[in-house]
Picture 1 (cartoon, rainbow, N blue to C red):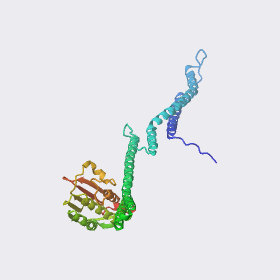
Picture 2 (picture 1 turned 90 degrees about the vertical axis):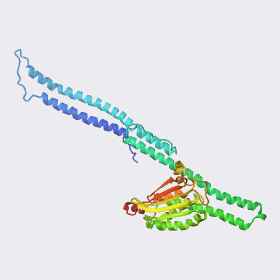
Picture 3 (picture 1 turned 120 degrees about the horizontal axis):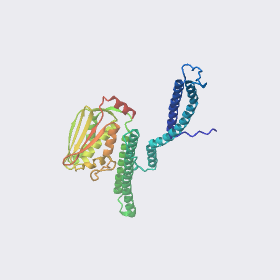
Length: 379
């Protein structure tokens, strides 16, 4: 079995390239100088063998012979200079390549540190805005996004565990009380209490499955009229709004999109339920559906408690509530809304209303966006 030769590092490659480039350039220069010198020193016609009156060769003949004898020495000196220059060029190439690759080594060290879950490390490379600086900044941006994602996932896991544990603890407490005093246990009441706890658990699990489905994306897009989806969502939430004495104002126009009807239904239902549940008695909910040059726009506005502007981004975190817990809510509504909108290549914006409440706007791509339809079909 043959052993593989170790590959040269990039630094060694650069140093080798510098050395070879210098050697080729110096060789070409030396050969050119040698040829030029030999051509200039050689006479067009050999000088006649003349002698001086004293019987010694003439000065012209003596100079020609001297010039011809100096050429081998010139070639030797050029060869020695070439070898010395090659050594100096290789050393300088090694040093320069090391300095040039130092930021790359730093990025590699940060990447190894990140692999051990230290997402706080950053390259923070200083210097001119060149290709390596751009690479380092891009890497830092990726690390920042990863850190936010991991923090969000940790919060989600902790909050989900708490939400799932609450009904289980409640059911266990009910059973323990019934076991401690069996003679006083009212079986129909016990069954009803346990069924209520079980329904709460089922609702939470169903909501988590809806969030997972929305984050997975659109599997198959079909042409859907949002006006029809709005009517169906109003039918599901109108009774709760009537119970809380809320007035619902609807201004709707046909708005056709390519999307998943089930996910779009969950988006509109969650929008309306949030507007109803996070409201004050006797308040109102305004729903407007229309289109602009960019595509359909669904806006839901409500009255309710004031939400600080610096907390609006928290509303999209799972299990985060802007107001105290409301009945039937798990704090997943806004997370599902954003996931469904992003699955349809749309966007969600939230703005606080003067005097309290929120205005949530969902923008979806226009129907004639062919690229969007291809993306939806391949999601």
